[in-house]
Figure 1: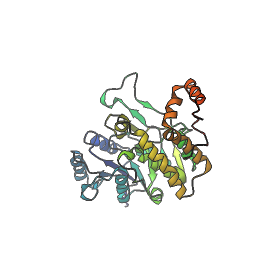
Figure 2: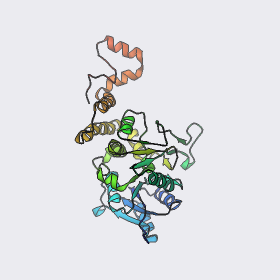
Figure 3: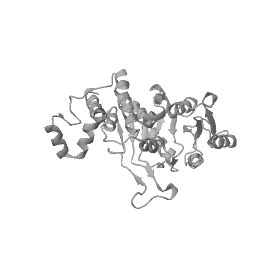
Length: 315
């Protein structure tokens, strides 16, 4: 009898003692049972290392603890890739250490991928979770945000790539993904150049690679609770005013990556140009946000065109 797990769950973590056990327990609560859990320690110096090692010791057949050489911190992307290299499963399901899954997550996603053999990845619609600490209010409740595109269908490349870069489609949460290991390994896995500040966009760099070359199924089902909390990387970067810097790095990386595989067409170039325009012209962008009357006054002063889509501005 083959006891090889069909799904490898990869949880990479760094100082996640507050939430890690809850994430792990949501894996144990899955209705689908053919899984293994890989806990990848990215150099933690809090009790999350002890928590992860404890699960591995109690359930050695199902849970494995992994770390980088000399317990180094190498970043989220490198940690996900480490887990993926060790994984035995046909399918990979990443789970962020501060998120939790609903019990049918693995069961439903395996069923979708099994039914569509030409599809490399599936995702749904996550719940943005504020009530985890009892803080949600009527003004800021938990919510499920539509993906911005039609659901329950397959998208061939590069449709989703153009939709995401243009802002029409939301980028999926990493914890909501499931993908075929072989297909993603062929793409080189996650982008390890997205470290430190830039790791804020490592998940979007990953989906760019997938969207450019592989078919993806987008579902309207909710399987993941994405925890909103002030200690998350995204929240910290926004508070520090560093999000724009990280976004510029990502938008500059996209055409470089696509060019290397001859996947950068005229439409994608135009989309990236529009998205980079505010970064190249921050003052004009701030003025544009103030309203049409301000724009007209600036134009009369000779500042030139302020349209983000102007072909005069190059990526």
